[in-house]
Image 1 (tube, rainbow, N blue to C red):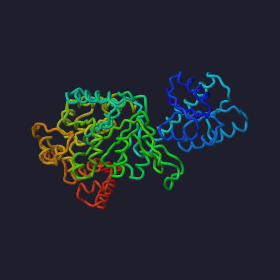
Image 2: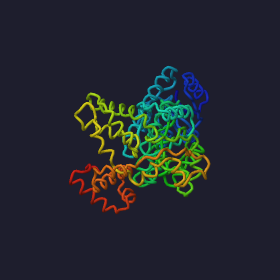
Image 3: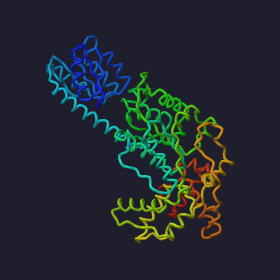
Image 4: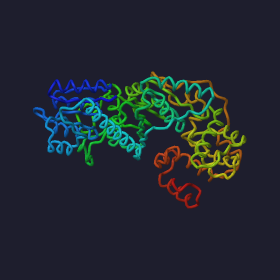
Amino acid sequence: MSTILVVDDKEMMRDSVATTLSRKNHTVVTAHDAKMAIEKLGQRPFDLVITDLQMPQMDGIELLSETRRIDEQLPVIVMTAYGTVDSAVAAMKRGAYDYITKPFSGDALLATVQRALEHSRLMKENSILRAAATPAGIRSCKNNHELIGESPTMSQLQHRLARLADSHGTVLISGESGSGKEVAARWIHEQSPRASMPFLALNCAALSTSLLESELFGHEKGAFTGADRLRKGRFELAEGGTLLLDEISEIAPEIQAKLLRVLQERSYERVGSSVSRSVDVRVIATTNRNLPAEVAKGAFRQDLYFRLNVLPLVMPPLREHLDDLPALISYFLAQVSLREGKPIKTMEGAAIDRMRMYAWPGNVRELQNICERAAVLTPDPVIAAALIAPWLNATIPAAYIPMSRPLAERSRIDPGPASLPGSMIEVTDPAPSQPSELQAIICDGKLRLEDIERQVIIATIEHNRGHRQRSAAALGIGVRTLGLKLKKWKQQQLVAATL
C-alpha cells in the first residue's frame, strides 16, 4: 500500500484514476490544480504523483519541476491526451518517471504505477544505505539483535522490552556506556509493528550543531554555503519507522527546542524552508548521563525531558548480572569464530571466575572486546585465565569509580534526581562491599606504578571514545602531556598505534 497524489483539473478523470488505485488498497489524495498539489506535497510525504499535463494556470511540466524541488526522489507519472513526442521528451527531461497517454486502461495505469513504486522503493533504500555509510554514526538496521542472558535481571529487562515494543510511544533508554542501549533500541524496533520500515541511528555527539540540524531535518538547496542540492533529513528518511538518537544529552539548546516541536506536533521544517512537513517516526533516545540532574543544572530542557521520558528504560550494568557471563562469553566467542572461519574456542572455568571478580567499567562492550582479543591471540582451543588476567588488572578511572559503588550509596553522594518527577533511578539496598580493583592491584604487587598509569590513561581514553581533551580533563593533565605519553608508549609498542 502506498500514498499517491492524483492531480487533474477534470473531476471525472481524477475520480476514475483514484477509484482504480483505491481498489488496489493504495491511499489516494486528489488535487484539482497544481497549486493545491504543491500545498499537499509540503504537508505530508507521498510515494508517487500522477498529474495531468494540460492544466490552467500551472501545467504538469511546471508542477513536475516544483515536485522535483520539494523531493527529487519522488517519482512522477504524467498523463496527457496530447501524446506527442515533444511533450514526452519535455516531461522526461524534467525528471518524469513515465508518461501515459489518455485514454488508458486500468491495467495499463496499474502496471505503470507498480513500476514507479518499485523504483521509488529502491531509491529510498539507497538513501538509507548511503546514510548508513556516512561517518556521522548513522546506521541502518537489518539484522536481528539478541539480548543474551537468563538471569533474573535480564528476564525482567526482556519482559519490559516486549511491553515497549508493542507501543508506539517515545522511549528513553539510560545506562552506562557499553551496557547495550543501542542493542535494546534495535530489539524494540525489530519486535515492533514498525519492523518492516527503516531504522536509523544518529550519534548526536558526533556532529556540530549546524550539521546535526541538517542531518535531522534536511535542508533546501542554497540554504547555506555548500548546500548545492536538496537533502532529506533523518526524520524524513525514517518515515514510518524508528529513529534512534544516541547520546541525546549532547544536543545544543536550539536543537532541543526543534526536537521538542517534532515530538509535540509531529511536524518540522527543513533548514532553509518555511513549509511544515508532517512526520510519522518513533523516537528512541539513549543517554549515559543522569538527565534529571542535567535538567536541574539547566543543561537540558525539562519539557523535552518529559517528552522523551514517556517510556523509560534503564539498562543494567554488567556487574549487576554476572550470572550471564558464561552465556555472553559463548555468544561472543561464537561470533568471532563465525567471522574468522575458525573453530569455536571456549573459556576455562578459572578465567570465568576471574571475570566475576572484575567491576566491568566498560560493561558488555568491554567483555566483547576481551573475548575477541583472547580468541584471536591464543592458539589454543581453550582460553586460559593467565591470558586474560592482565587485561582485568587495569585501574578503574575516576570517571568509573562513582558508578562502581552500590546504587544506594551513590544516591546519598551524587546529586539525586528525586527532585524531578519521572525519575528512572531507584534506590536499592546496599550491596556487600568488595575490594576495589585498585586495592587488588596494590595487594597483588604485580604491576609497576608506570604500568598502572598507562592502563588508567588508556582506559580513560577508551571511556571518552578517543576524545583527548575530555580524557586529559578527566585525568587532570594537559592535552600536550597526554600526547607526549602516548607518543612515548607508541614508540615502545606498549599501546595501539590508533590511540
